[in-house]
Image 1: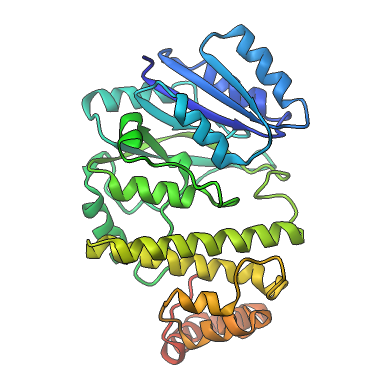
Image 2 (image 1 turned 45 degrees about the vertical axis):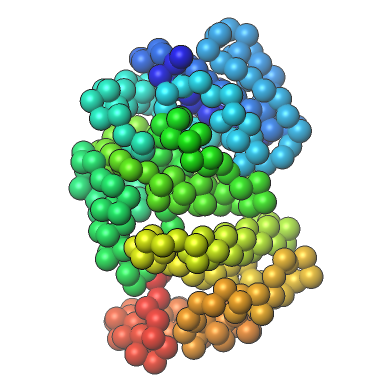
Length: 350
């Protein structure tokens, strides 16, 4: 049984895949398996993955029809043998000593979940550190989910909050299986929000490391960063709606107040996020929700949010911060924020 299973879903990344696979294959820690799921690529990605699999017996390559990253990762999880799971996107790469660093920690602290940081690698080859959702937690310390949430909920009280992304998470395989956690196939975009949230809430032990050895490559033509046409906007809005709905349903079933509040907050964040594509789409016929469905989520929407839901075309145009920044009234930013909060009982997060 290998210590790590590195799961790599692959879809049309021929220009990035070799760097990704090299970073996994040449790890200084060798006790790994690499599970590649070719999700119906129409370019040379499948051929590249096949070449690597033929040269390295640790690589298990599976070809499937295009079904999206959720099903691809779920199929990989079903066959993963490693003690811990590392999720690596096929247009990203990792430092060659990442697994060695992780192993040193997990040998001494066999936690359910280990959190790590990552770098952003831009299309201009600029690399910079990213402050992730968990940066407020003390590094190199073990938390329970309740302990971590108590700190995070205080800090994010007036801001949007999602427990994400999957690149931050190294998860014990048996823990995933024991709790039957998987990616929701009905969520086409942002699928790791639900997965990461469930992992985070169910974990008994979470180690917040200071490791930063994952490079999140901002590829211009990826699923998430390519040009947003109407179909992408529709998938984005629908995905956020399903996320909001599922998180709301989970909040109603949750008995722990702290976890209930987190799920409620994430659900409201998803509603806030869907307003951006909704502004361009209005209530398009291909959307799986309407204004009534958003009100059925029973969130206590501010006055401005209700205007945005009923008339999405006005989203961002009657926002005082947007107005002040658009016309260069930078000195009025803080004043605009206070006025906005007083009148609409809502603190915008930009």
